[in-house]
Every structure is written in C-alpha cells, then in structure tokens.
Image 1 (cartoon, one colour):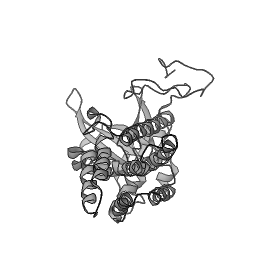
Image 2 (cartoon, helix red, strand yellow):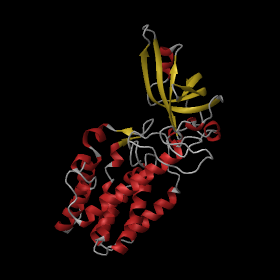
Image 3 (cartoon, one colour):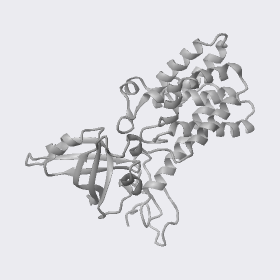
Image 4 (cartoon, one colour):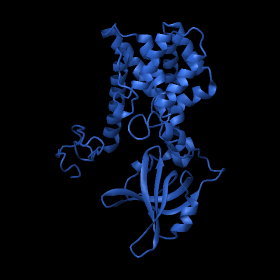
Length: 334
C-alpha cells in the first residue's frame, strides 16, 4: 500500500476543510449539464473508508478522459459540505501509473478480521465434519486453487452486509460457529448437512461479483444470480462423486435454493426442512448484525445518540450516550 494511502484514514473520514493527497478508485464518472447547457463532471470516488461525490466545474471533458469508471486516480482535494452532504473538492487529479505504489486491493474495503485465522477456522470446521460424502464434496471444492483463493477474497454482498474483501469467508466462518451453538440446543439438526449448506450457499458469490475497480455485479452475476450459479456448481461437483446418496443430494441442494427464505427475496423455493429453516435465520441474523455494526460505526451523527436516517431500514439507529447533550432521532443533525 502506498505511504499516502496508508497515512490517511480514508476520504470518508477526512475532516472538512483539511487538504490532502491520496489515491482513489473511480466508481462513477458522468458528464451532466447546468441549466445553461454548460457541462460539468460528477464523480463518485472511493477507497477502503467508503465513497464520496466530487463535482468538477472547470475542464470537465478533459477530466472525464482522465477518470473513466474503474480507474485509479491520484487526487489533491479537500472535503467540503454541499447541500448538507460531504463532497470532495478536487484541485488536482491524474491517473495512477504503474510506477505509483498503489494496488487496486489497497483501495477496496476489506475485512478487519485476521483472514489467516479465518482460513484456519474454516479448515477446522471442514476437517471436523462427520460425514464422508459431504467432506469429500468440500475437499473437491477447496482443492481447486483458483476457487479457494476466490472464495477467500470474495465479498458476501455489494452494499448491505459483509460488503468487503474476505467478507464471504468472514460470514461463512461466523455461521459455522453459530451452527455449533445452535446444535447444542437443537440436537435434532443434522449438523454436518447444515455446515455443508452454510459453506455451499455462497459458492455462487465468487462469480457474482466483479472486483475491477470496486465491488459490483459481474455480467454473469447480474444475469443469473448467485443462487442459480451456486446450485449448478454444487450439483455438478456432486455428480462427480461416486455413490453420493440421492436423498442427501436433494437435501443439500434444497439448502442452496431456499436459503434466501422467501421466493420474493430470491429463493427458488421456500425452506422446507429443519436445516433449511435454521440456515435461513442464521444468515439473516449474521447479515443484519454485521450491517448494523457498520452503520453504528460509520453513520453515527457527531454529538447525537443516533445515526442518520437509514433509508433501507426506514429508521434511525440508537447508538447510545455519545455526548452529554442527547438529541431525538427527529433532529440528529443538531
């Protein structure tokens, strides 16, 4: 990572009015027009801290050529407030070159967990499976180096939960740990099947997302969706395992197809087994708590006990006593 990128907390966390120099990835680049017909450039720039808009009024067409979507740029800028929102005011900008000490992965958000420890924890869960056919299936998957590395690097989402590098690995390991606890209270659950479903439910995500500049849907991911791709992938791998029980195959594939919960939410079928219902709710639990942790950390309003209004949740989130002057959620900006 470049020294400039390392030294800064990230564009989203920079204080208003303090000039800085850093590298960013261009998430969006669009020419818009004033009422007079004069063009200006609207950019959305991002790094590991998040994303901010920037408007360039002078030489917009020239800067549009410098900053196409997906490129890395070096900027000299300052954070300002425009219509009650933070934006970047850019004074200088150029494209990054091969000589610049910055990589694309330096600019993408990444898990704050110890990724090597997560990998070891996942391996321990797989090794502990007490079922030869399920263990063989997972061994087939992770014996493929390209798949293994893609699985360890992939995000689990684009915007809502675990939406960062190694997010899928973090999500899966958390679910596996939760499954162990759940099975203590509900021994009726087929734990090897549930754990295999946890790992396999997100297999399609390694092809759903593109990391070319920022986390976005690949063409394949947008057209097919990770549930369908994961189903096809696991069904194909099972077909290569001699003697894989037919009943077990159906129950495992059902976990993949039903884990989003409802057909309106992306499930091909509703959950109809004990393990499928458990998987659905474990995923919802971890996804919601992960998203809320990020919201509390990143969207708390300074001097308030509340976050800003979260449109997706249609509510404010209470963060607690962060100041001596509490405010109501109706006026969190005060």
